[in-house]
Every structure is written in structure tokens, then in C-alpha cells.
Amino acid sequence: MKMAARRGLYQNGLGGMTVGSRAGRTIMRSGLAWFALASLGLTAVAAAATDEMPFPEGYRTWTHIRSAVVSPASAAFARFGGMHSIYANPVAMDGYKTGTFPEGSVIVFDNHQVFNFQGTDVPTQRRFIDVMQKSGGGWRFSEFNGDSKTVRNVDVAQGQQQCAGCHNASKTDHVYSQFVP
Image (cartoon, rainbow, N blue to C red):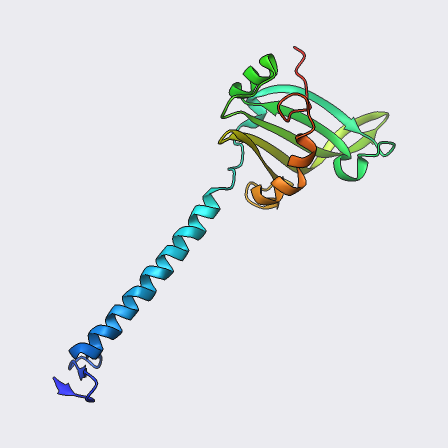
């Protein structure tokens, strides 16, 4: 190996350079330190991404709680206009019976635009799916856009700002809907 400079860099005969001497070890250590910091950063980003609720696959097979149409005459029309159906997973059904929802409860609010056909409101394009999940002793909120299982209008952090305030006012563990068999 030929010495390229007095700083500990050597030509390795393969067209590249290798590091030698104390200066070279310092360069290697700082490179490893940067790599370790970058890995920690990526781990933090991955952990933050896993804090999001997954799309509630199969929610339409859960218990149907109720459906309603919010018409243009309603003050809630701008936000909730259309037809919505509410579904609860089996764990949440215990909460509908007792008034306190156990850990693992998931409630879905499925909102569609409506088309009035000969006096009958018919659901058409999905507007959004709101999801509530009881986790870590509290409720988390998220909203999926249209038919997407990945694109969110509201992520969990935004849900704490946009959804939790209203749901905190509910007298039944943050849930407004009632199940009547």
C-alpha cells in the first residue's frame, strides 16, 4: 500500500482509500457516532409512525350501532353532512352495555355523501372514516380520507386537538352514540 498523505490515508490497491493511524481511527469513530445518531433518529421516526392507528379492517362486519343522515338544514352539515353509520368492535360492545369502554375498544364513524333518488337518500362516495380507539387508558382519534386505508385527514396528534375536546364533554366515556338493539 502506498502512502497518499501523512494523515493516515493509504491507497489500498483497489482504487479506494483505507484509513490508518490515530487520525484515521478518529475519523472512523466520528463516522460511527454519526451513524449511531442517524439510526436513533430513524428509530424515533419509525416509533412515531407506529403510534398511528391502523385502518380498521373488517369494521363493517362489527356491530352496527346506528345510521343517520345529516341534511343541509343541520348546523353540523359542513362537517358531517351526508349519511353516516357507526360500527363497534366486540370489545367496545361491553362499553355500550356498561357505559365504560374497556381498553381495545374501537368505534368507526363511516361517512358518505348522499344522493336523493325519488325521495330516498342513497349513500354514494365515501367522504371519510373517523376512528376512535381506547388505548393506554384514554381515547385516540384519527380520520381516513375517502376510501383510502393510508391517507389521513387527521392523524392521532391532530385528533387530540380536533376531536378530543368535543368527546371529553360526553357523559358516557367520550362516546356520544348509544346502542339500542
